[in-house]
Structures are given as C-alpha cells and as structure tokens.
Image (cartoon, rainbow over all chains, first blue to last red; front, side):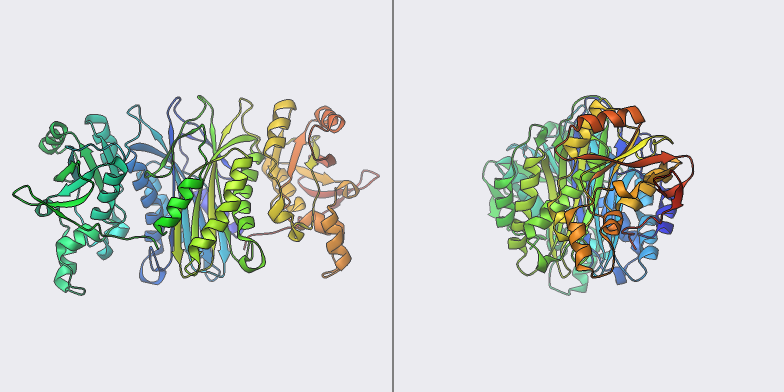
Amino acid sequence: MESAFIAWLREHLPSHPQLHLGPGDDAAVLRLAADRDIVLTTDLLTDGVDFRLHACQPWQIGRKAVAVNLSDLAAMACQPVAVVVSLALPHAGAAELARALYHGILDIALKYDVAIAGGDTNTWDGPLVVSVAALGQLTARGPLRRDQARPGDHILVTGHFGGSLLGKHFSFEPRVHAALLLHQQFELHAGMDVSDGLSLDLSRLATASGCGAAIALEAVPIDPAARELAARATDGRTALEHALSDGEDFELILAAPPAEAERMLDQQPLEVPITRIGQMIDRPGLWQLAADGSLEPLAPCGFEHR
Amino acid sequence: MESAFIAWLREHLPSHPQLHLGPGDDAAVLRLAADRDIVLTTDLLTDGVDFRLHACQPWQIGRKAVAVNLSDLAAMACQPVAVVVSLALPHAGAAELARALYHGILDIALKYDVAIAGGDTNTWDGPLVVSVAALGQLTARGPLRRDQARPGDHILVTGHFGGSLLGKHFSFEPRVHAALLLHQQFELHAGMDVSDGLSLDLSRLATASGCGAAIALEAVPIDPAARELAARATDGRTALEHALSDGEDFELILAAPPAEAERMLDQQPLEVPITRIGQMIDRPGLWQLAADGSLEPLAPCGFEHR
C-alpha cells in the first residue's frame, strides 16, 4: 500500500497498554497477563457473500470484520486483547477504501479496548476481502466451551433472532461483556455465538456435547426485523422461521443447570434480555418441545458454507 | 465449506502440545510458557500478485502463505507457536483446492512445529485468497527489533539474494531457527527479513534506526538464480541489480557490533553462509561503499506495495 496510507494509519492507531511494540516492525509484540491461556480465531469476509461493497458503507464492513471475530472471542468468554487486519483491495480507489474501512475498524477496536496489532494491506485485480484474526485471554474461569452441555441443562439465549439482513448483520454488538459477566457470575456448562442460524448452531452445540436439544418454539425471542421480513412475504417464511434460520444474529446460546438458569432469568443482569427457549435432552438431534412435553423432530436450518 | 472437507481437515490436523482446545469450538485455546511476551503478525496472499494459481501447485501456495508469516516471526527472533488460516476459494473445485492448499500448510506447520489453531474456509465468486495470522512467543532475549541499529554496526545477511521468481519465492525456508540461534548466541542490535528487496528493506531498517547504511556492492551474495535471470537479459538488469531489488528472498538482515559480527563470521554457525555486506553509518540514507571508503548514493529498489 502507498506510504501515505501507512503514514495515515500509524497516526490513527491508538496506543494500547498491552501493545508493547506496535506496527512498524516485522510483527507486533504483546504483553499478556501471566499464566492465562490465550484464545485465537480468524474470520474472513468477502464482497458478495458477507457484504456488498456497493450497497453499504465501507466503515460498516470494517466494523463487521472485527465484530464477527470479537463474537467468536465472546463465545469462549475471554477478554479480547488484539486483532490483526489483512485487506485485499480492488486497485481503483484502494487508499480511499482502506481509510474508510479503517474508520469502522478503529471505532470498534476502541469501543472494545482491542489493540490493532498489525496488518497487511494489499491491492489486486479482485473484489474486496477483509480478513481479521483476533487474540483474547481467558479469565481464571477458563474457556466457555460448546461441548460440555448436559441433558437437563436449560437453554438460554441473549437478545432476539431473525431478520439480521435488515441491518443487524452490520450493527450487532458482539456479546463480549455479556459473556464475561455471565461466565463469571453463573455456572455455565456450554455456550457459543449464533452466526449461521439459531437452530443450526444449537444443533451443533448439542452434537458437540453428545446430547440433543429441544426448543419450545413459542419461547424463541423473535426480532422485529424477522416480523418485518415475514410481513413482506417475499419467500413465504414466517417470522419464527426467520428467527430459527437467518443467522448473523451474533447472540449467545448458553446451556446451564436449571437452578443457575433460574437465577439468571430472575436477575436479568444484561442490557439485553435473557430468554429460556428449551432444554438439553438425552435423545440426540434437534426437537420441537410441545406444551404437553412431547417431542417432534425439528430440522436444523441456517447458513451452511458451501 | 462442505462438512466433508471439515471432517477431512480435522482428521489431518496434528495435535500440538500447546493447543489446549483445537478447532471445533468457536476459537482455539493455546497454552503459553509463562511470562513471555507474544508476537502476532499477518500476511495475505492473492492470486495474480503473490502467486498464479494456474502456474503452480496449490500446495506451494499453502506452504508459502504460512512460510511468509513464519519469516516475519523469524524477523523478531521468536519461537513460532500457532497459525490460523483463512481461505477465500473460487466456487469451482473449492474442496479439492482447499485440500491441496492444506497439504502445503500441514507440511510446513509440522516442519516448524506450529499448531494450526483454526481457520475460516469460504467460497466466493472471486479468485483465490489465502490469509494467515501467526503467533509466536519471545525468548528471554526479547524481540529482535529493526529500529535499534547503531552507526558502526556491521551489516550481515544470511544466504543469497535475487532471482527468487525462479523458484525460491515458493521454496524458501523461513529463517526461524537461524534467528533464534543468532539472537541467543550473539549480541544483535537489529534485524529484519527481506521480503521486498535487499536494498529497500535495508534502507527501511536504517530509517527505523535513525541512521544510514553503506553497502559494499561486491560483497553482496548473489543467488545463482539472479545470475540466470541476468543471463536471460530480459530487462537488462545485472545479477547484482536483481540481488539488490528482486525481493521475496526471505533472508535475514542483521546489524551487530563489529566484534560480534567478526565472531559470527568466524563461527558461521548456520547451515547457510553469513556474509558481511557493509555497515551502518551516521549519515542517513542508503549508500554504496567504495573500496577507498568513499560513499555514493544508492537508490533503494524493490517491491513497493501500490
């Protein structure tokens, strides 16, 4: 990338207490709290799949690229520390686009107190690609895993589901603080973030934990955006179907023992509601839990990467 | 990505002593040696710029994507620990291409004892993009920085330069072990890896250190590939010009006090030769050092990212 952009970027990168040696050398040096395991993840966004460059603001893309990684760190209930950002920019207007992307990147990094520890800014003949890797540090409570749910656990979720395409897929808040707080104050057996659809991701959590999951469909918290999509009736799907399958909600699914679940529901310690939507069961698979306690199979539905 | 590929990948990912919780959850958990700072870097390769998919083997691309990141870790003289790998694959033949890429990725990860801690495998309408982020851990000697060279330091390099396009840009060995060994056994003031061209990268090291660099051109170790390119005379450049500017050598430039430089040259502790090519000077900029000690300006030349 042109040196004017690099100079601009260095000027705009905030300092961070854990960033011991920042961008400018071959790699960044980070100082961590002693004796804590670290968490590493990566997500790559491409034009036409995760966003459409000509139908949104570039800062929204930059923000989203960092936010989806922070959501993965939240799913482990760890404290975000740093990100590195790699860009493949179309030649035309590359420097301008890079600056616009970084407005969103810098904004969310500041909000979640994450160091931008480095990056690689390239131009090429292809469409825009934004790749981020994120580093977090576990608390003394260890990781929130997705494979430790047990039959009998209640299934809780944060926030509302469905219709993210109307805006939430850009504007969502990664549940970093929520996950840290809940993991600290309650006994959670398992958790993950919902990126590909509530029913699909819950079925994954159940499979990883070697059990099944039963959802009381009437309990699923439906986002107003899902109702709006259903009202438009473009594809005949109901608001509930949108909530179960749309994906990019970036809310948390949690499995907790009943007494802890009750305590969480009573206290409602988050800015967003916590809702109980069902329970983990012995029988493998995903199920619809009727009012009379009977189970009907439920097809996991969501975004499957081709 | 299709679940068959994910299953294949999980089967082929080797375990690693520091990988506490591997791919399968939302993120990986790594256990580090206590009280050591970590190093984080990222590099993204695109079709048409860093490789041409139809003119090479996909495993070479996978290997290179990891190797360039390891070279950045080597430049800091740290111990590589883990990488995460994000792919944007063209739709047609995506799973087959992903497997082929991973053959190279797995091979070099095993060779350098690096955990593959996670990844994000996507398909899209665009050409191939491979983005890697790498994590390393510093030794008790701290980082090898590029901004601490001092006037009077001798400038040393590993290996040979130029003509990497004939093969070395795929087959190079990142100087991980060399950097760790030299940083441990000798007093080094500064160091970096050569990715964009010997003269350009040396001028960057000099600028970062607030001094200048003078090269004895006759001392520059020229790679046979550079001589071959010059013999083809496609663009009239001499073998030396190739050595000074081609880039993707992924050798080390080091600045060391004269006595330490002498000791390194005497001992030659690496599998590749260490060569003295000049010295750091007070006068800013890049210079050609004549046999009589006089200085002529030398234009830094190499690959500038647009």
